[in-house]
Amino acid sequence: MSFFTSLTGLNGAQTELATLANNIANTGTNGFKKSRVAFGDIIASSPLQNPARVIGSGTAVLSVTQQFGQGAIETSDNALHMAISGQGFFAVKGGSNGTQVAFTRNGAFGMTPDRFVVDTGGRRLQLFPTTTDGAILSNQLGSTIDAKLPLTSGLPQATSLIKVAANLPSDAAVIPAKAIYTAANPYVFDHTNGATFNYSTSKTVYDSLGNPMAATIYYTKTAAPTVADPVHHWTAHVFVGDTELTRAGVAGLPMDFDSAGVMTAPAAAVAFDAFTPTTGGDPVAIAIDHGTATTQQSGAFNVLTMTQDGFATGQLESVSINESGTLQVSFSNGEVHVLGKVALAYFANPEGLKQIGNANYVTAPLAGPPITGEAGKNGLGGIMSGSLERSNVDLTEELVGLISAQRNFQANAKAIETSSTLMSTIINIRN
Image (cartoon, rainbow, N blue to C red; front, side, top):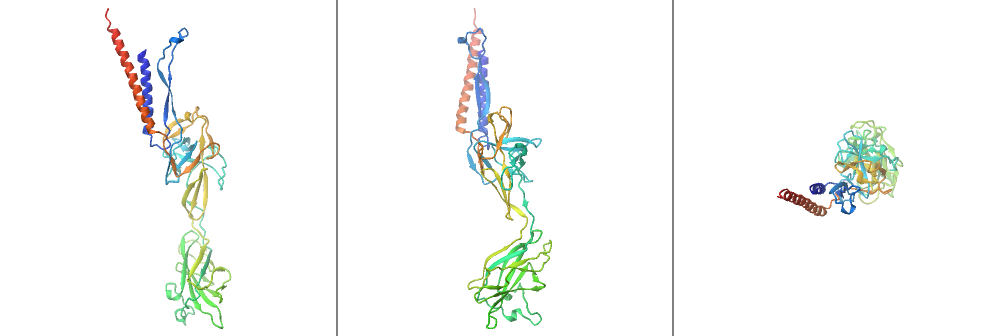
Protein backbone atom coordinates (compact mmCIF):
# COMPACT_ATOMS: atom_id res chain seq x y z
CA MET A 1 0.00 0.00 0.00
CA SER A 2 2.81 2.44 0.81
CA PHE A 3 4.05 2.15 -2.79
CA PHE A 4 0.75 3.46 -4.13
CA THR A 5 0.50 6.15 -1.45
CA SER A 6 3.93 7.49 -2.38
CA LEU A 7 3.04 7.19 -6.07
CA THR A 8 0.11 9.59 -5.60
CA GLY A 9 2.55 11.98 -3.94
CA LEU A 10 4.92 11.69 -6.91
CA ASN A 11 2.06 12.37 -9.34
CA GLY A 12 0.92 15.35 -7.31
CA ALA A 13 4.43 16.80 -7.08
CA GLN A 14 4.91 16.28 -10.80
CA THR A 15 1.65 18.13 -11.51
CA GLU A 16 2.74 21.00 -9.29
CA LEU A 17 6.16 21.14 -10.98
CA ALA A 18 4.49 21.28 -14.40
CA THR A 19 2.12 24.04 -13.24
CA LEU A 20 4.93 26.12 -11.77
CA ALA A 21 7.03 25.61 -14.90
CA ASN A 22 4.12 26.85 -17.03
CA ASN A 23 3.77 29.93 -14.81
CA ILE A 24 7.47 30.70 -15.12
CA ALA A 25 7.42 30.16 -18.89
CA ASN A 26 4.60 32.72 -19.23
CA THR A 27 6.12 35.45 -17.08
CA GLY A 28 6.33 37.65 -20.18
CA THR A 29 2.89 36.80 -21.62
CA ASN A 30 0.56 39.80 -21.58
CA GLY A 31 -2.64 39.16 -19.62
CA PHE A 32 -1.50 35.73 -18.43
CA LYS A 33 -2.88 34.53 -15.08
CA LYS A 34 -0.83 32.15 -12.94
CA SER A 35 -2.21 28.77 -11.89
CA ARG A 36 -2.24 27.03 -8.55
CA VAL A 37 -2.70 23.33 -7.77
CA ALA A 38 -5.16 22.31 -5.05
CA PHE A 39 -4.58 18.93 -3.39
CA GLY A 40 -6.78 16.74 -1.24
CA ASP A 41 -6.05 13.64 0.77
CA ILE A 42 -7.49 10.24 -0.15
CA ILE A 43 -9.29 8.30 2.59
CA ALA A 44 -10.60 4.78 2.09
CA SER A 45 -12.42 3.06 4.98
CA SER A 46 -15.15 0.51 5.55
CA PRO A 47 -18.16 0.87 7.86
CA LEU A 48 -16.70 -1.57 10.40
CA GLN A 49 -13.26 -0.02 10.44
CA ASN A 50 -12.15 1.75 13.61
CA PRO A 51 -12.02 5.50 12.64
CA ALA A 52 -9.16 6.01 15.08
CA ARG A 53 -6.99 3.65 13.00
CA VAL A 54 -7.76 4.86 9.46
CA ILE A 55 -4.63 5.57 7.41
CA GLY A 56 -4.87 7.80 4.37
CA SER A 57 -4.21 6.45 0.89
CA GLY A 58 -2.28 9.38 -0.49
CA THR A 59 -3.15 12.63 -2.24
CA ALA A 60 -5.13 13.65 -5.28
CA VAL A 61 -5.09 16.74 -7.48
CA LEU A 62 -8.43 18.41 -6.88
CA SER A 63 -7.99 21.25 -9.36
CA VAL A 64 -5.57 23.46 -11.24
CA THR A 65 -7.12 26.90 -11.10
CA GLN A 66 -5.97 30.27 -12.39
CA GLN A 67 -5.57 33.21 -10.08
CA PHE A 68 -7.16 36.31 -11.63
CA GLY A 69 -5.27 38.92 -9.65
CA GLN A 70 -4.37 42.18 -11.35
CA GLY A 71 -1.10 42.13 -13.26
CA ALA A 72 1.27 45.07 -13.44
CA ILE A 73 0.37 47.82 -15.96
CA GLU A 74 3.00 49.06 -18.39
CA THR A 75 2.68 51.92 -20.84
CA SER A 76 2.71 51.57 -24.60
CA ASP A 77 2.82 54.07 -27.48
CA ASN A 78 0.06 52.22 -29.36
CA ALA A 79 -3.44 53.64 -28.78
CA LEU A 80 -4.96 50.22 -29.59
CA HIS A 81 -3.12 48.61 -26.68
CA MET A 82 -5.49 48.47 -23.72
CA ALA A 83 -5.46 47.28 -20.14
CA ILE A 84 -8.38 46.80 -17.76
CA SER A 85 -7.84 48.34 -14.35
CA GLY A 86 -10.13 46.13 -12.29
CA GLN A 87 -12.22 43.11 -13.12
CA GLY A 88 -13.48 42.20 -16.56
CA PHE A 89 -12.44 40.69 -19.87
CA PHE A 90 -12.30 42.01 -23.42
CA ALA A 91 -14.76 40.23 -25.71
CA VAL A 92 -13.23 38.99 -28.97
CA LYS A 93 -14.71 36.95 -31.77
CA GLY A 94 -12.99 34.52 -34.12
CA GLY A 95 -11.86 30.92 -33.94
CA SER A 96 -12.19 28.25 -36.61
CA ASN A 97 -15.76 29.24 -37.49
CA GLY A 98 -15.18 32.97 -37.11
CA THR A 99 -18.08 33.37 -34.67
CA GLN A 100 -16.73 31.91 -31.42
CA VAL A 101 -16.79 34.51 -28.65
CA ALA A 102 -13.76 34.41 -26.38
CA PHE A 103 -12.64 36.54 -23.46
CA THR A 104 -9.18 37.85 -22.71
CA ARG A 105 -7.18 40.20 -20.50
CA ASN A 106 -4.48 40.45 -23.16
CA GLY A 107 -5.05 43.91 -24.63
CA ALA A 108 -2.21 43.87 -27.18
CA PHE A 109 -4.55 44.65 -30.07
CA GLY A 110 -3.37 45.45 -33.56
CA MET A 111 -4.84 46.00 -37.00
CA THR A 112 -5.22 43.69 -39.99
CA PRO A 113 -4.68 44.78 -43.62
CA ASP A 114 -8.47 45.16 -43.93
CA ARG A 115 -8.39 47.43 -40.84
CA PHE A 116 -10.08 45.16 -38.29
CA VAL A 117 -8.82 45.50 -34.70
CA VAL A 118 -7.65 42.05 -33.60
CA ASP A 119 -5.80 40.41 -30.72
CA THR A 120 -2.54 38.51 -31.19
CA GLY A 121 -4.53 35.41 -32.14
CA GLY A 122 -6.43 37.17 -34.92
CA ARG A 123 -9.75 37.42 -33.03
CA ARG A 124 -11.66 40.64 -33.64
CA LEU A 125 -12.30 43.06 -30.80
CA GLN A 126 -16.01 43.50 -30.11
CA LEU A 127 -17.76 46.83 -29.59
CA PHE A 128 -21.17 47.73 -28.23
CA PRO A 129 -23.05 49.79 -30.86
CA THR A 130 -23.58 53.41 -29.84
CA THR A 131 -25.20 56.63 -30.98
CA THR A 132 -23.06 59.35 -32.54
CA ASP A 133 -22.49 60.86 -29.10
CA GLY A 134 -21.35 57.56 -27.54
CA ALA A 135 -24.50 56.36 -25.75
CA ILE A 136 -24.75 52.55 -25.81
CA LEU A 137 -27.66 51.17 -27.84
CA SER A 138 -27.29 47.59 -26.58
CA ASN A 139 -24.87 45.89 -24.19
CA GLN A 140 -25.74 42.32 -25.16
CA LEU A 141 -23.09 40.03 -26.61
CA GLY A 142 -25.40 39.17 -29.49
CA SER A 143 -25.47 42.83 -30.53
CA THR A 144 -21.72 43.50 -30.60
CA ILE A 145 -19.97 44.60 -33.77
CA ASP A 146 -16.43 44.05 -35.00
CA ALA A 147 -14.08 46.96 -34.36
CA LYS A 148 -12.93 48.26 -37.74
CA LEU A 149 -11.08 51.53 -38.34
CA PRO A 150 -12.23 53.45 -41.44
CA LEU A 151 -9.55 54.89 -43.69
CA THR A 152 -11.55 57.87 -44.94
CA SER A 153 -14.63 59.83 -43.96
CA GLY A 154 -17.17 62.01 -45.70
CA LEU A 155 -17.48 63.32 -49.24
CA PRO A 156 -15.27 66.09 -50.62
CA GLN A 157 -16.64 69.62 -50.97
CA ALA A 158 -15.45 72.13 -53.53
CA THR A 159 -14.36 75.52 -52.26
CA SER A 160 -17.00 78.19 -52.79
CA LEU A 161 -15.80 80.99 -50.51
CA ILE A 162 -12.44 82.36 -49.43
CA LYS A 163 -12.44 84.78 -46.50
CA VAL A 164 -9.47 87.08 -46.07
CA ALA A 165 -8.62 89.65 -43.43
CA ALA A 166 -5.36 91.46 -44.15
CA ASN A 167 -3.57 94.75 -43.69
CA LEU A 168 -2.19 96.41 -46.80
CA PRO A 169 0.58 98.88 -45.88
CA SER A 170 -0.46 102.48 -46.36
CA ASP A 171 3.01 103.41 -47.51
CA ALA A 172 3.11 100.78 -50.25
CA ALA A 173 4.54 102.09 -53.50
CA VAL A 174 2.23 102.64 -56.41
CA ILE A 175 3.22 100.34 -59.28
CA PRO A 176 4.49 102.69 -62.02
CA ALA A 177 2.02 103.22 -64.82
CA LYS A 178 4.46 102.04 -67.43
CA ALA A 179 4.67 98.70 -65.68
CA ILE A 180 0.98 98.04 -65.77
CA TYR A 181 -0.43 100.05 -68.64
CA THR A 182 0.08 99.74 -72.37
CA ALA A 183 -1.69 101.32 -75.28
CA ALA A 184 -2.93 97.94 -76.47
CA ASN A 185 -4.23 96.80 -73.10
CA PRO A 186 -5.37 99.26 -70.48
CA TYR A 187 -4.30 96.95 -67.70
CA VAL A 188 -1.48 94.44 -67.93
CA PHE A 189 -0.75 92.13 -64.99
CA ASP A 190 1.67 89.24 -64.87
CA HIS A 191 1.61 87.07 -61.78
CA THR A 192 5.04 85.73 -62.68
CA ASN A 193 6.48 89.28 -62.68
CA GLY A 194 6.96 90.66 -59.20
CA ALA A 195 7.19 94.19 -60.60
CA THR A 196 3.45 94.16 -61.34
CA PHE A 197 2.23 93.53 -57.79
CA ASN A 198 3.12 94.58 -54.26
CA TYR A 199 2.12 91.57 -52.12
CA SER A 200 0.61 88.11 -52.41
CA THR A 201 -0.85 85.41 -50.20
CA SER A 202 -1.93 81.82 -50.87
CA LYS A 203 -4.39 79.24 -49.60
CA THR A 204 -5.11 75.64 -50.54
CA VAL A 205 -8.59 75.17 -52.03
CA TYR A 206 -10.37 72.06 -53.31
CA ASP A 207 -12.24 70.96 -56.41
CA SER A 208 -15.39 68.82 -56.36
CA LEU A 209 -13.29 65.63 -56.18
CA GLY A 210 -11.35 66.88 -53.17
CA ASN A 211 -8.17 67.53 -55.14
CA PRO A 212 -6.11 70.36 -53.62
CA MET A 213 -5.31 73.48 -55.64
CA ALA A 214 -3.29 76.56 -54.78
CA ALA A 215 -5.29 79.81 -54.74
CA THR A 216 -3.17 82.96 -54.70
CA ILE A 217 -4.28 86.57 -54.30
CA TYR A 218 -1.95 89.27 -55.69
CA TYR A 219 -2.40 92.84 -54.43
CA THR A 220 -1.32 95.78 -56.60
CA LYS A 221 -1.55 99.41 -55.43
CA THR A 222 -2.68 101.27 -58.53
CA ALA A 223 -3.19 104.84 -57.30
CA ALA A 224 -2.48 107.04 -54.30
CA PRO A 225 -5.07 109.57 -53.10
CA THR A 226 -5.28 112.98 -54.74
CA VAL A 227 -7.29 116.12 -54.04
CA ALA A 228 -9.73 115.18 -56.75
CA ASP A 229 -9.81 111.49 -55.71
CA PRO A 230 -8.88 111.11 -51.99
CA VAL A 231 -9.02 107.30 -52.14
CA HIS A 232 -6.30 104.65 -52.06
CA HIS A 233 -6.86 102.31 -55.01
CA TRP A 234 -5.74 98.67 -55.05
CA THR A 235 -6.50 95.79 -57.38
CA ALA A 236 -6.59 92.15 -56.31
CA HIS A 237 -5.94 89.41 -58.85
CA VAL A 238 -7.06 85.92 -57.88
CA PHE A 239 -5.38 82.88 -59.42
CA VAL A 240 -6.10 79.19 -58.94
CA GLY A 241 -3.01 77.51 -60.24
CA ASP A 242 -2.22 79.44 -63.42
CA THR A 243 -5.86 80.30 -64.10
CA GLU A 244 -6.92 83.85 -63.25
CA LEU A 245 -10.47 84.23 -62.00
CA THR A 246 -12.63 86.79 -63.73
CA ARG A 247 -15.96 88.54 -63.21
CA ALA A 248 -18.05 88.61 -66.38
CA GLY A 249 -14.81 87.97 -68.22
CA VAL A 250 -12.97 90.91 -66.61
CA ALA A 251 -9.87 90.24 -64.53
CA GLY A 252 -9.01 92.07 -61.35
CA LEU A 253 -10.98 93.05 -58.24
CA PRO A 254 -10.84 96.80 -57.41
CA MET A 255 -10.36 97.62 -53.73
CA ASP A 256 -10.72 101.13 -52.28
CA PHE A 257 -9.64 102.54 -48.89
CA ASP A 258 -10.46 105.91 -47.40
CA SER A 259 -8.00 108.21 -45.68
CA ALA A 260 -8.52 106.35 -42.37
CA GLY A 261 -7.52 103.06 -43.96
CA VAL A 262 -11.04 101.61 -43.90
CA MET A 263 -11.98 99.52 -46.92
CA THR A 264 -14.95 101.13 -48.68
CA ALA A 265 -15.21 98.74 -51.63
CA PRO A 266 -16.07 96.01 -52.18
CA ALA A 267 -18.64 96.04 -49.38
CA ALA A 268 -19.55 92.35 -49.65
CA ALA A 269 -18.26 89.05 -50.99
CA VAL A 270 -17.50 89.12 -54.71
CA ALA A 271 -18.33 86.07 -56.82
CA PHE A 272 -16.06 85.13 -59.70
CA ASP A 273 -16.98 83.26 -62.83
CA ALA A 274 -16.99 79.46 -62.66
CA PHE A 275 -13.93 77.75 -64.10
CA THR A 276 -13.02 74.17 -64.87
CA PRO A 277 -10.02 73.12 -62.75
CA THR A 278 -7.16 71.30 -64.39
CA THR A 279 -7.31 68.73 -61.58
CA GLY A 280 -10.65 67.42 -62.87
CA GLY A 281 -14.12 67.50 -61.40
CA ASP A 282 -16.99 69.89 -61.95
CA PRO A 283 -16.61 73.62 -62.65
CA VAL A 284 -15.85 75.60 -59.51
CA ALA A 285 -17.22 79.05 -58.67
CA ILE A 286 -15.33 80.85 -55.92
CA ALA A 287 -16.23 84.06 -54.09
CA ILE A 288 -13.76 86.28 -52.23
CA ASP A 289 -14.78 88.11 -49.07
CA HIS A 290 -12.35 90.60 -47.53
CA GLY A 291 -14.89 91.43 -44.82
CA THR A 292 -14.58 94.49 -42.63
CA ALA A 293 -11.29 93.54 -40.99
CA THR A 294 -9.19 94.20 -44.09
CA THR A 295 -7.47 97.58 -43.69
CA GLN A 296 -4.81 99.83 -45.12
CA GLN A 297 -2.78 100.92 -42.12
CA SER A 298 0.85 101.62 -41.37
CA GLY A 299 3.06 98.64 -40.81
CA ALA A 300 3.96 95.55 -42.76
CA PHE A 301 1.73 93.49 -44.99
CA ASN A 302 -0.03 91.04 -42.70
CA VAL A 303 -2.65 88.38 -43.33
CA LEU A 304 -4.69 88.18 -40.14
CA THR A 305 -6.88 85.27 -41.23
CA MET A 306 -7.47 83.39 -44.44
CA THR A 307 -9.99 80.56 -44.54
CA GLN A 308 -11.89 78.59 -47.15
CA ASP A 309 -14.91 76.28 -46.93
CA GLY A 310 -13.81 73.36 -49.10
CA PHE A 311 -12.30 70.08 -47.98
CA ALA A 312 -11.10 66.78 -49.28
CA THR A 313 -12.26 63.37 -48.17
CA GLY A 314 -11.04 63.04 -44.59
CA GLN A 315 -8.05 60.77 -44.02
CA LEU A 316 -7.70 58.90 -40.73
CA GLU A 317 -5.40 60.88 -38.45
CA SER A 318 -5.78 59.52 -34.93
CA VAL A 319 -7.47 56.90 -32.76
CA SER A 320 -8.42 57.37 -29.13
CA ILE A 321 -10.07 55.21 -26.47
CA ASN A 322 -11.22 56.78 -23.22
CA GLU A 323 -11.65 55.19 -19.79
CA SER A 324 -15.23 54.13 -20.53
CA GLY A 325 -14.08 52.36 -23.71
CA THR A 326 -15.43 54.82 -26.28
CA LEU A 327 -13.50 54.27 -29.51
CA GLN A 328 -13.17 57.50 -31.49
CA VAL A 329 -11.41 58.25 -34.76
CA SER A 330 -10.42 61.68 -36.08
CA PHE A 331 -9.98 62.64 -39.72
CA SER A 332 -8.00 65.30 -41.56
CA ASN A 333 -11.20 67.13 -42.55
CA GLY A 334 -12.02 67.73 -38.89
CA GLU A 335 -14.65 65.02 -38.55
CA VAL A 336 -14.68 62.89 -35.40
CA HIS A 337 -16.62 59.61 -35.38
CA VAL A 338 -17.55 57.32 -32.50
CA LEU A 339 -17.23 53.70 -33.67
CA GLY A 340 -18.64 52.12 -30.49
CA LYS A 341 -17.65 51.15 -26.96
CA VAL A 342 -15.29 48.34 -26.12
CA ALA A 343 -17.35 45.38 -24.92
CA LEU A 344 -16.38 44.05 -21.49
CA ALA A 345 -17.66 41.03 -19.59
CA TYR A 346 -17.12 39.39 -16.22
CA PHE A 347 -18.16 36.11 -14.60
CA ALA A 348 -19.42 35.04 -11.22
CA ASN A 349 -16.66 32.41 -11.12
CA PRO A 350 -13.87 33.28 -13.57
CA GLU A 351 -11.83 30.29 -12.30
CA GLY A 352 -14.39 28.12 -14.07
CA LEU A 353 -13.56 29.47 -17.53
CA LYS A 354 -12.02 27.12 -20.07
CA GLN A 355 -8.57 28.08 -21.33
CA ILE A 356 -8.00 27.97 -25.09
CA GLY A 357 -4.50 29.46 -25.19
CA ASN A 358 -3.06 32.89 -25.91
CA ALA A 359 -4.56 34.12 -22.60
CA ASN A 360 -8.03 33.55 -24.06
CA TYR A 361 -10.98 31.83 -22.42
CA VAL A 362 -14.40 30.57 -23.40
CA THR A 363 -17.45 30.11 -21.24
CA ALA A 364 -18.01 26.91 -19.29
CA PRO A 365 -20.81 25.82 -16.90
CA LEU A 366 -18.66 26.36 -13.81
CA ALA A 367 -18.02 30.01 -14.75
CA GLY A 368 -21.64 30.99 -15.18
CA PRO A 369 -22.98 33.15 -18.01
CA PRO A 370 -21.05 36.26 -19.08
CA ILE A 371 -22.26 39.52 -17.55
CA THR A 372 -21.60 42.30 -20.04
CA GLY A 373 -21.43 46.02 -19.50
CA GLU A 374 -19.66 49.33 -19.99
CA ALA A 375 -16.17 49.86 -18.62
CA GLY A 376 -16.14 51.64 -15.30
CA LYS A 377 -19.72 50.74 -14.39
CA ASN A 378 -21.45 47.95 -12.46
CA GLY A 379 -18.23 46.56 -11.05
CA LEU A 380 -16.29 46.49 -14.32
CA GLY A 381 -12.85 48.05 -14.40
CA GLY A 382 -11.87 51.10 -16.41
CA ILE A 383 -9.94 50.90 -19.67
CA MET A 384 -6.44 52.33 -19.92
CA SER A 385 -5.51 53.07 -23.53
CA GLY A 386 -1.84 52.94 -24.46
CA SER A 387 -1.20 50.38 -21.72
CA LEU A 388 -0.76 46.64 -21.36
CA GLU A 389 -1.41 44.32 -18.43
CA ARG A 390 1.55 42.10 -17.76
CA SER A 391 1.44 38.57 -16.39
CA ASN A 392 0.58 38.39 -12.68
CA VAL A 393 3.32 35.78 -12.11
CA ASP A 394 5.70 36.63 -9.27
CA LEU A 395 8.92 35.00 -10.40
CA THR A 396 10.43 34.89 -6.91
CA GLU A 397 7.37 33.17 -5.48
CA GLU A 398 7.33 30.64 -8.32
CA LEU A 399 10.99 29.75 -7.86
CA VAL A 400 10.45 29.14 -4.14
CA GLY A 401 7.44 26.98 -4.98
CA LEU A 402 9.53 25.12 -7.54
CA ILE A 403 12.11 24.22 -4.88
CA SER A 404 9.36 23.09 -2.51
CA ALA A 405 7.73 20.91 -5.18
CA GLN A 406 11.11 19.41 -6.05
CA ARG A 407 11.74 18.51 -2.40
CA ASN A 408 8.25 17.03 -2.20
CA PHE A 409 8.98 14.89 -5.25
CA GLN A 410 12.28 13.74 -3.77
CA ALA A 411 10.66 12.89 -0.41
CA ASN A 412 8.01 10.72 -2.07
CA ALA A 413 10.67 9.02 -4.17
CA LYS A 414 12.59 8.36 -0.98
CA ALA A 415 9.45 6.87 0.61
CA ILE A 416 9.14 4.47 -2.33
CA GLU A 417 12.83 3.55 -1.98
CA THR A 418 12.32 2.86 1.75
CA SER A 419 9.27 0.71 1.06
CA SER A 420 11.25 -1.22 -1.53
CA THR A 421 14.04 -1.85 0.98
CA LEU A 422 11.56 -3.12 3.58
CA MET A 423 9.90 -5.37 1.04
CA SER A 424 13.27 -6.82 0.05
CA THR A 425 14.11 -7.46 3.71
CA ILE A 426 10.85 -9.30 4.25
CA ILE A 427 11.33 -11.42 1.13
CA ASN A 428 14.88 -12.35 2.17
CA ILE A 429 13.88 -13.57 5.65
CA ARG A 430 14.98 -17.21 6.18
CA ASN A 431 13.41 -19.64 8.58
